[in-house]
Amino acid sequence: MGTGSKVISVILRLGAFCSSVIVVACLSRFFYLLNLANAHANGRLIYAEVISILGVICSLLLIVPMKYSFYAFPLDVVFFICSIVAFALLANVNSSCSSAWYYGYWGFYWGRFWTVPNVTVATIGTAGCRTWRAILAFLFIGAMFWMLSAILVSSAWCLTSVHYADTMGTGSLCCY
Image (tube, rainbow, N blue to C red; front, side, top):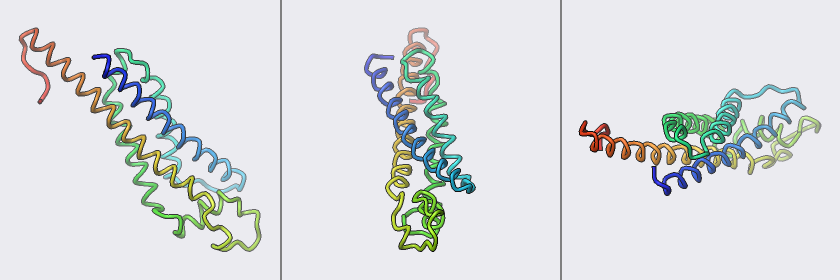
């Protein structure tokens, strides 16, 4: 692996780390508010939180440009797929801040409206809307970082194996 691909790999893994940390922070705050209200957590939110926590751990382990981090490109593909699934699940449950799910669940608990008597849709307004959109955005951005990392590392690995196969006279191992 060349120096340029190592630098780009570190930048991409750092981007995936930062995106995952933002998602974990926002969802953890929401789960804290749910705990205060003694309410249940939506399974889709839990899935997104778990994937983001695993993304934080794996991006920290793989951020150092060592040999093992370049052989872990299938892990990049797995995290890309899991992040896209988490994004799709959350985008499917609520695509805007004006849906019934938003007013009855996210906005209600984010704005701590369980403590207010006679809550209406007008009372809730757009409480937590920016945070909800940030979660969706950074799930998608993090997925793109994982995808680009997988493409970079797999192509560099493939080019290295083709060069090795050509020097050994065994033929190409990659399709391109």
